[in-house]
Length: 188
Image 1 (cartoon, helix red, strand yellow):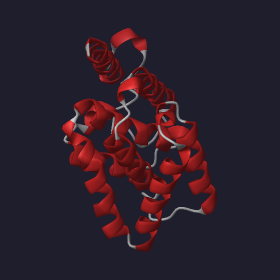
Image 2: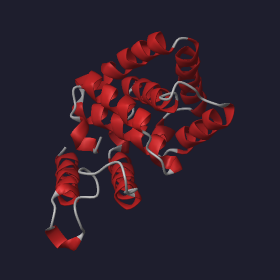
Image 3: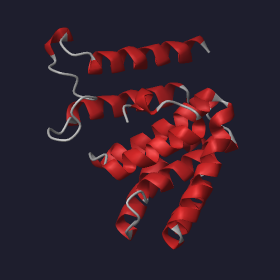
Image 4: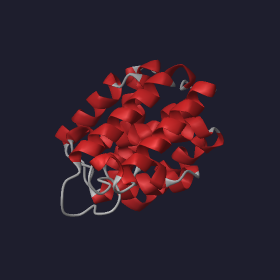
């Protein structure tokens, strides 16, 4: 467990260095502060890279059904955050899921089935599908490591296209709330 704590500390100090203003001459914290105007692609990509490596190092411990199911609900929630998912986007997210290093702990067909089930429900009735997805996500709250991994998985998948839309950020915040973790820990 010491390794996980060390990773969390790295993430915290990374975020502090992102948000603290004059340190190291990197300009005003690219991540917090002014989200609108300038695209802070660099820091977002850095953060996604950091989450990927954290997930990879926790991979051996992320094998529970709760993590699998919550991650698929999370990915569906993010994919359908704007209320629609076209077939190309669905396929792209599916590919990201089955090629994700950590999610390879699970059979690809299980992941696809769960992801698509959630997407179908969200598209049929967004409010009911969202409530259901958040219930499934909340089941991972018992283990803080899994809870954080679920959020990180959602962000990694959401950010893979280089855009992290406000609706996707909102979906991540809702998932954080269901899991009892702070959204600020993930820069949203």
